[in-house]
Image (tube, one colour):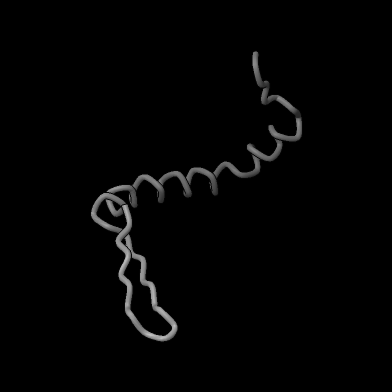
Length: 56
């Protein structure tokens, strides 16, 4: 998902970038971010009511 490039210097420089596999998730993560932004008030209100039940 990531590529890592090491430049031998003092100090060593590292560069990370998304590889093709990571880039293929870009659209999905943007959609998830948009959904979270659009529904943040409802999610926060629901969280405050304790409606998330574990082990039910």
